[in-house]
Amino acid sequence: MAEEKLRTNQKLQGITSSVQNDINDTDYSDGDILVLFIFAFHYHCRQLKRDVTQIHPLITEIYSMPSPEEMSKVDGDTLPSSQVENAQGYNSRNPLLHDLDGLTLYEKKCVLINREIDAQGMGKYQWYIWGLCGFGYLLDLLWAQAFGLVLGPLKQELGFGNDESGNISTSFNAGLTAGAFVWGFLADIIGRRWAFNLTCLISSIFGLCLGASNNYTTFLVLTAFVGFGVGGNIPIDTTITLEFIPQNKRFLLACLSVFQPIGVVLCSAIAFGFIPVYACSPNFSEPNPLVSCKNAEAGERCCSRGDNMGWRYLLFTIGGITLAVFILRFFVFNFRETPKYLIYRGRDSQAIETLQHMAQVNKKQCGLTLELFESLQADDSSLGSGNSATPALGAGTKQLNMAWSQKAKLELSRYKMLFSSPKMTRLTVLVWLTYIMDYWGFTVAGFYLPSILALKNGAASVSLKSTYAAYIYTYAPGIVGVLLGATLYRIPAIGRKWTMVLSAALMGISIILFSTVDTRAKNEGLFTMEYFFQSMFNAVLYGWTPEAFPAPIRGTACGIAGFWGRLFGIVSPLIAQHLYGRTGENGQGDVNSVLYLAGGVMLGCVITTALLPNDMMESKDERS
Picture 1 (cartoon, rainbow, N blue to C red):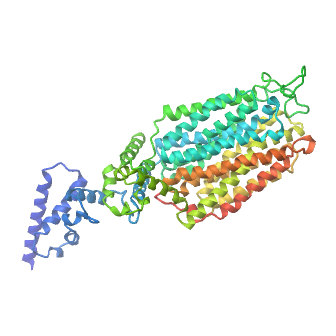
Picture 2: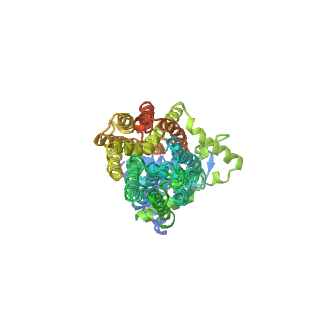
Picture 3: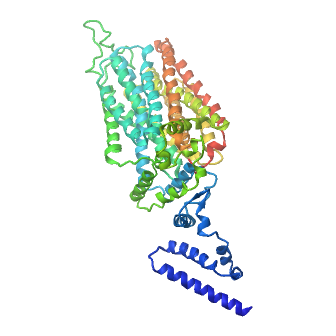
């Protein structure tokens, strides 16, 4: 027995030497040497006619391995043995590859992209993306706030009444509605990159023209076009950010909303510098304000353009800021298309190029290769068969070479994802209802509250300059609201769902209570409270929405949600202006009814967010 073991050991040593000689002739990496050694050792062991498996467990494992010829058969398709050996060897030592069973080809590629981004971490490229997308959020509220702040002086100069005041918000929201719908769809069709840049370009061009308006109709038309550009910002920016940041940094999606109160505070600060200084006197908040020259009789002193340039200077400045953001996005930063968009369009090589570019900026190594994607395509079960179009997403060149009819069918299959199961249908409908009520509430509040605060403070003998200064420090706590929302977002016991339920309830209550107070301290206190919880709620809602939907439909899903919200943002000011046009206390508009309208509808978000599916609120799916 001892002699037999000795002879077997000698043969094994001979095999080892033979394998070593085979490998020494070529320059291989350490990883390749290990893989080749195992396969060569396996081959030579098969030549032995003895049971060498008794000597060492490692030999048992190697001896039981299939031959290279057997390994070349993958689900009925025969590949060259060398290709299979390379793929199997690579897979065995690549940390990106594990737990991919049961996924479609597209989902496998998404998982690998997420793992590659996770491996690179939150590098400079991601911070650039986060900052530039944050500017989109800033512009959204910069413009929305501007229309609320210019309403008083604009109405005084152009001569329209309270019963027409809601037309500005309606025009802006009409543009926002079209923008959210169009840009959301385009982001999934032409790509995130074009939508990312064109939204800013369009809003900057029409925004710069807005300050030159000489009549109300022109102002409303230009406002709608500004809204069309701005409307695509949030759905596109959240989608882009989600698809570039590591999974353990997704709370930064909620933190994007910190740019919104910054935009509001910035707008308020600019308005404070211009409107009280360059306004007609007596101004719109004072007793017996100067009438518009359009409504004045011959020889009567009136509010003219030259005496009321403050609101124009504000809009010119915001238009300039918007143009500066476009220049940063298009000319300064080299933004690449997101890998997940490229994957589901079948452009695998470009997706790898984007990841390599990102790694270069981050000074890291990219571990994902095109060869790895191609090796995944050897599994035809991931590509689907027959008439099933959805699994063909991400099929690389196979997808690119599909007939137009198949591509159209594949495109339509994406939209069915919104209602692919009862739970997905429930999620989609509740998200739509939440956006509808949220936009209804904050559109009315955001547009009318600045004017209402000015009127309430005017009744309390507070000057217009003091009121515009108050806008700065009452909106500033919204920054803290966003950060608090992002913090609660990460606490498992509270999470996204209950953060939204709590903040929606407190926002609605604060708007309703605002109708009952009459002193400066109470006015500004509840004004601050309303915006604090509005910022907190929207931070979580906007950050979570793209997480809830799969990448092929993500831009569309966010765009449609924004579309429904913006659509009802058109209707709500029309109802509010009807209420505001009625005579209330001190001959002013019916302020309290406007506040009840905004606060009451906002409380509906408490119900819709409470009914959202728990497992789709807090889950961390690597495929997203």
